[in-house]
Every structure is written in C-alpha cells, then in structure tokens.
Length: 432
Image 1 (cartoon, rainbow, N blue to C red):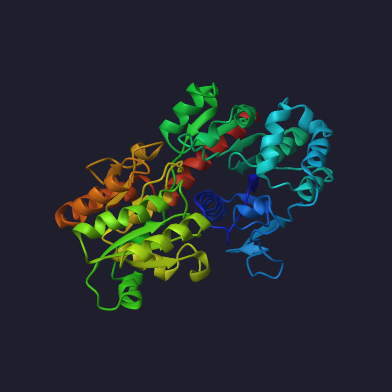
Image 2: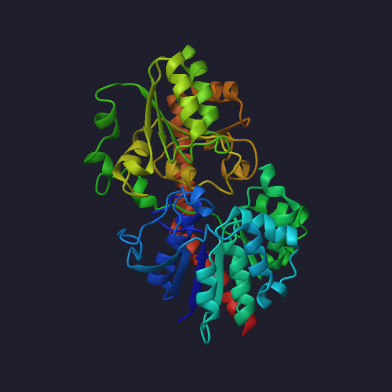
C-alpha cells in the first residue's frame, strides 16, 4: 500500500477546481487503488483568507473540519500576525529551504500570496521520520507549494505539483514566482497547451511534465430517469415557476478573470434581441460582480438568479445539478482556467458550452463541434454567440451530445484517477 501526502492550498468546503480535483483523487485512489492518503491544508475557504484574517475560514466545530467523506483532513491555522519581513527571515533560516536555491524575490512574492502555515511545517519537521512514497501539492503560486518542496527535501521524498497554471493571465507570468516550478520532480499539466507553455516559456524540461485532464462525475449530471435529480427536483419550477424562458447558466467564481462580469455586460445586448431569457449565476460573489449586477438591474429588466455557496450544499447540490440539466446553454468565457471542470459538468448534462478563445480553453472546447469560443471580455461577441445558439435548438442539441460523448469516453473522474495512479507508480518505481 503506497502512502501519499497531499498538501493542497485549501480543501472542501472550499469550492474551486483545484480543491475538487484533489478531493476526487483522494477519494477514488483510496477506495479503488488502496492508497493511504494523508491530507494537510490551511483552514481557508475563500482566497481572501489565504492572507487576510477577514476572509472565510473553516471553524473547528464545522462538520467538515476534521473529515470529508470519511477521509481525515488535517487543517492548520494561517498565521496572519507575523509580518512579511518576519516570515522571510524565518523561512530563509530553514536548511531545507536553503537547498531549494530560490531567489529572495520568488520567496517574497509567494509569501505575499499566502497561506503562511508555520505550525504545519513545524509539525512535519518534528516527526522522527515520514514514510510517504511521494508528496502531491497544488496550486500555483501559493506558499503551500514551497512548504511541500521543503518537506520533500527534508525527508528526501519526491514532490509532484498540479499547478493549474493560468498562462493566459498576466499575473501568472511573474518571472520571480515561476522559478519555483523548476524545483519539482514532476509537474502535472491539465492540457497540452499548458505543457507547451511550461516548456517554451519557463524552460522546464519536457520529461518532467505529464498531462492529465480534469474530470466529472458523469452519472451525477447525465439526464437519466433511473438516477437523476431532474425528476424529483426542478430548478425552473422552484426558481422561475412555469416561465418558458430560455435559461443561460454560468457556474464560476464571479470575477473579471472568469468572464462573469463580461456576461453581465452582455445582458443588455442579449435582451435587445431576445426578451424571454433568464440568467443564472452560481458561485462565490465578488465586490466587482455585485457592483456590475446592481448596474445591470438598474438599466434592464433582466431576470437574474444569483446563487452562492451559502445557498448550496456542495458540489452535487440538487439545485446546481438541476440548473445544468435544465439550462439551454452554459457559458464561462474565462481566461483563468487551466481546464474548466464546469464545461465537463455541462457536457455531462448534454448542454452546449461557450468559452473564451484564450489560454487552455481552445483545447478543451472543440469549436463548432461541442461549443463556441468568444473573445475574452468582449460583451458584444458573447451576446452574438449566445443569441445564435439560443435560436438554433438543433445546434444546441448537436453540441451537447458531442460533448456528452466526449466526457463519457475521456473525462470521468475514474479515468483521471487511473491516469494519476499510473503516474504515481511510475515515479515511485523510478526512485526505488
């Protein structure tokens, strides 16, 4: 039985693609392949909490604090009191850090991102020994990935990272922070485009980069009368009534990077051509989103349903699944996705998707086969593509079916876990 240490930045009830990926891998690899996986992470829920005490954290009395789906979770508090200078000094005194040969600028930039988990690192270096076969961490550019490297160096354990590198986002091209990626034994990229970028832009040796896509629980989203939320819960009935409006769905972090604010800006253009449309936004809100939502509600009569994680019970909340199943199309015109699990969820439900023609998305969405691509942050282009799809029922069905078949063949979590298992075993065997 192989023993693996997982060091993600956060864990459920934090909801994003990175957390969902690690949770899915931990549960499937434990159950189906017999791995013993220990999970250590911060107690942060949202991004703000990674560096700001005013962010959302998991409380000790929360039912998910110590365990999620029968897997033990070891959460450590983030140190918000120690100054940046204090953190720099402490880390630079650690021998395991010195051997990484990172520049001070790299360490400083990543420490600013957080989360600083002094207690977690102390816990590990106080152990007499660690019998892990490997360490797997995520995601770039947060401080837990440096801690993973230090722990790996201290105990001579190989370290893997799935960075979810958003190479189309200018903030991720900081030459100071990217040097840390050259220190890992293995990098798992989500797409071939990400892999090529890591090789060509960061000069990372191609032999240490493997590609494993994201996955989806196909059976949860597929419309099936034997096992399906649609037939015992209806999103439209509960939120819209008997309204026959077309339903446009977005499920993402509600910010500029994910394209959510661009969707809001596209609403007036859409309503000029089609009146009977309802817009559904599911995901954590931001101040920028709330401001734009307020503006749109003042200048239009748009029907907008706004749900956040506070309204949901988790990844497989019946409201969310029903929204995917009853939507006419799914849209997430993001530039900050290493893959985009939400596209897979939409395809599993047989729905067409719209994404941005930037970053990794053109590899994920096959344009004019299972979806459409738009220019990032172009509300008029978004509106034109949405209107075109809403007017063509046969095309929506064609795209949705093509996506559904692709997901079933290549992108279930079981398929992704099997690929991850093989990579783990290859690395473990190479180093024996």
